Amino acid sequence: MRLELSESLRSRWFHFYSIVVVGLMLLLITTGISESRVLGFTGLSRLLVTYIQIAMAVLPLFIVVSTARSMVGDREAGNLEYMLSFPVTLRVWYWGRFLARLVLVLSPVLLALGLAAVYGLVRGHSVPWWHFGLYSGLVAALAACFLGIGFLVSSISRSTEVALGASLLIWLTLVALLDLLLLAILIQQHFIPEFVIGIALANPLQAFRTASMILFDPQLILLGPASYVILDHFGVTGYVAWAMAYPTALGLVLAALGYWRFSRTDLV
Image (tube, rainbow, N blue to C red; front, side, top):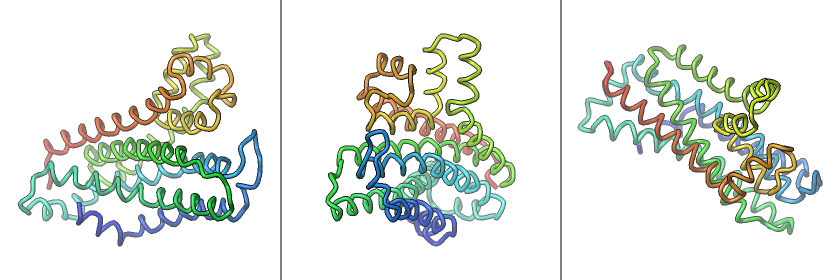
């Protein structure tokens, strides 16, 4: 884990990723978005809603693309055989990399949220600490989910080109199915609302997006009639818990499948 942390801290992808994630927050702060009011959101509430919605598109892409190349890239470069020659088990090596990547992915996001809190205190805004904590948990769940996807793709791919193509395809599919293409077709075919919304919430991006909205819009007015199904089945607290638990569990299961596949293939 320490080796993965030290190597990634020197890599270009981490520097670029950190600049983008923290830079987005600085850009939103300098544009004065916290002083505006949209749909009743103002102050840090408005700032957090905007930042989290942007991060939802940026964060998964960086995670899945950078992670999908990790192990298959080491295999192609010959580094994998060298690393596994040390007296450490494959299980420890695999999950140590997973935890290190999780720490690296979350650190810039938590730094950006910390900057927003400091900015709010300086400007005299009311700081919603509870929402800061919930957003941090949601981001951690989303990161764990896409790390699991990236590790699984990297474990089953035979080249970096295949890994990159598969990771981009998965990301584009999840983005496209947020609530536009699939939901429109299913609703047009007169499927029952519970079935349609259940498919939507199986998408970790949609689960994250809805949870980020429900924190500042407990009635989910922005979602329209779909809010009745979600609130009747989950409630606000139940849905936030679901949005944290489901992506985390999905990511860990996919990462475990990646480890199972990785441990039973030719590692050289």
